[in-house]
Figure 1: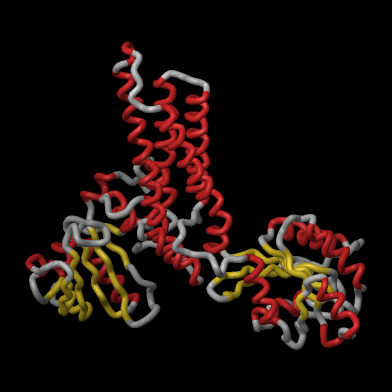
Figure 2: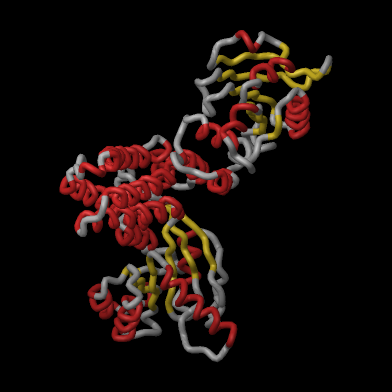
Amino acid sequence: MSVTASTAQEDTIVALATALGSGAIGVIRLSGPAAIAIAGSVFKGKDLTKQASHTIHFGTIREGDEVLDEVLVSLFVAPHSYTKEHVVEISVHNSAYIIGRIIQLLTRKGARAAKPGEFTLRAFLNGGMDLSQAEAVADLIASNSAASHQIAMQQMRGGFSNQLKQLREQLIHFASLIELELDFSEEDVEFANREQLRTLLLDISAVIRRLIASFAQGNVLKNGVPVVIAGKPNVGKSTLLNALLNEERAIVSDIAGTTRDTIEDEINIEGIRFRFIDTAGIRDTKDAIEAQGVERTREKMRQARLIVYMADPQQDDIDEIRSQQQEVAQLDVPFVTVVNKTDLLRPAHVSELQALGAVFISAKHKTGVEELKEELLRKVNLHQLNTDDVLVTNIRHVEALQKTLESLEKVIDGIDHPITSDFLAMDIRQALHHLGEITGSVSTDDLLENIFSKFCIGK
């Protein structure tokens, strides 16, 4: 997809903005300078070219004398629309035949089929939103938990953008003073106070480090918390996954080594999405396939955000469970020790296991599962997170922030070990460039194509 500002100004595009065949109504969207005229040429009702913005009109769509459908037409006159262009939305009956006929008719009248994300691309090119807000639109559509929805809404409304804007404005002020020094280089004057600049750079660097650090939380809120269920064979890992999901997702058997590969599924706990990964039991084995499964288990444990390590007091004594805890702790990943089959547990062992911080469950009888969910929330400590805080959820943004930080550190080093104003200015410009890549004030066609090609058609 070639994306240029001129494209957004010249063409009128059309696409179905709703899922085909899902629900009673489908919405066909047009955007561009001729959107109202094209829609009006096939609409039998009021003259759309004479109607006010944000009005809805009932009528029919006709091809010659043939009535294709009775419709509602919503008008959004530029610049009061999502794309800042003329936008028309035609609500039709959600028939694939009807929608296909109407879109074909509109293209014959001068519209062209929209590419993936092209409506949002036009909103960006026409100044309706910056690039990070546009990316948040895709995140909002993909959100499937309360937390990911709230973060996407916060970013789409400009929370992240506003913070970056403040940082850029502060940098631009000093950059302009240093650029001014270059005009008076022969007079050896300083318009930018170096100590004030250094203090500002340290403050900005601290904010950027905080934003980079927030990615660890923002990413899991957006994509879900990866939780590995691990332990020896036959301790009840698959039974626990089934109990958490409330369905028979994993095969359960008394035969050790039944689970030879990872099984993944998701649940939502108080607005936080958890991605549970049932793994092969950890043990020494001569079975080559099972050995591969054990190695995958260890790899998944290293990658996890949280580990649920299950123990069976019928198989393991207290010392063995304590040893297992120490082994898991070496991975430096938060973990919860779960003692299964507690309906078979002898009372004398309860206090010893409690001292190890164990959560008691019976996966078979689904007891203790709610208590385990509460412990999972406590361990990840995300349910108390203030989603009004600015969180970074996009790896592209993290990379740009890291490059910005590197440039700022060069400026600070240039102040501490004095260099000429032209080198300072160059490093500040580089920092501004990387910040601008996030919001789109600095962008390339390749970057925009990569971002918007991932959108659905019609958005």
